[in-house]
Structures are given as structure tokens and as C-alpha cells.
Length: 158
Image (cartoon, rainbow, N blue to C red; front, side, top):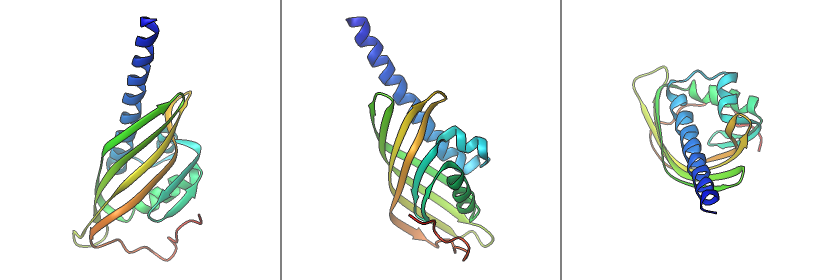
């Protein structure tokens, strides 16, 4: 029985570490990564739903397109996630945390836009490891000059 309990605890700790690593790599990828199909598959399920400040999208391809559009509004960014509360139930997990994002706007002087909010993320265990199946970023406060959204960058329908 002790071995079974030790294996359960080890699995729980391993899952927590893998989920934490996935979320940390995701935020870092926004600042330094290449946003392509491989990127989208590395972090998200095919049927992911993402609620973002610029609208809600459904599906990995739609999410990739929206993230590319959003990140193009900035020359440089730093995304910081913290205070994650991870709850694991078998092959599913939920994470509630905080996110602070600093953005230098594209195409102008070094205008800075900072946003902070709460994240809610649902993950599933896949054959390739943990992947985000649903996520929401709810902004609580901002500071500085917000990006000007082009007319064609209308939020996706909810």
C-alpha cells in the first residue's frame, strides 16, 4: 500500500511540474517564440477555446491567428505568470493564476502598455503531454497607452 501511495504522490508532483512548465514556456514563447503551427500544437488541444481581451476564439487555428495578430501590435513584451493554484483530477486539471504583461507598442516611440489580470486554464492529458483545452484572461487593470486596434482586428464572435 505504501508503494501505491508513493506512486500516486509522485504522479501528482510530476503532473504539477509538467503543467507549471507548460504554462511558463507558453508565456515565455509569447516574448521570444515563433508563433506557428508547431507552437500551437505544443500548447493547445485542437478544439481549444480562448477568452482574451480582444475576443473569444474556438479552435487551435483561430487561436494561432488571433495570437499572431495580437502580438504584432507590440515590438517587445514580457509576460509574467504567478500564484498558480493547480488542481488535478486524473487526466484533467484546472489552474487559476495571475498574469502581468508589459508591452512596448509597435511602430512608434517606446510607449509602454501594462496589463494585469487573472487567468483560468483547463488542461487535459494527451498522448503528447498536458495541453490547454480552455483558457481565459480577465484583465483587472491597465496602465499606459493601449494599442490601437486596426479596423480589421474586430474581436471574434463569442
